[in-house]
Image (cartoon, rainbow, N blue to C red; front, side):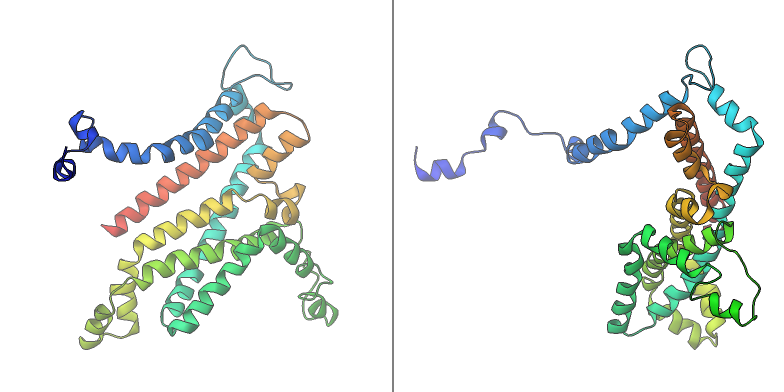
Length: 296
């Protein structure tokens, strides 16, 4: 066979008819990610769900059943834990998203070099981790700490005793969630074309008109993403409620830890974990539907 014949010969796979249809190529490319998702997410969730339906040392019943869920939802103490989890996450979100929106608008107007420094500084709390943040707030929120100590000593404020309260948990969660909210909102705000602001100005509109008719409507998808991220991070947080809230301010995450580490009841812990997932999904769907009306 000559060199010219070899160069013009079709590939072996093509001669054998092994070419895949175009519709299967995306599935083939997604296969590794789907496999990883199934092994690391779907399979553990399935194990937790099956475990939550099993009897345990506290509740005895025949076969798989919903007795663990009925038990948790029938006790006022556990209902208070669920309500506290949602309330803490909601308050954290209501503080973080508006503050993050204002911060994102201010950062978007900075010069490029200053903007990059500001964005890099936002990542420091994330890189430090929630445990370092919580330990810092434990030192700051004590009555004799460097933040409140001088004010209490001079009689400017009464002893507040913030540690062990829901307020301390919210303060810590806001600091931890805020960088995620700002970065998400900054991405949405920075994508708004500048000529839209120029059009508002040319029509006689001021800063308020630009905010109401340009920034807010076009950044609603970013606000929705930021709200979902903030609520999810706050509701699933463990370190802040455990160290700053204590036993008196338990959330679903600390309740799950107590079931596993204190009472060795993995079945009730699994049921509490599924309830946490359901609560988060219900709230996220409600937020999405509500924001969807404003987007339309």
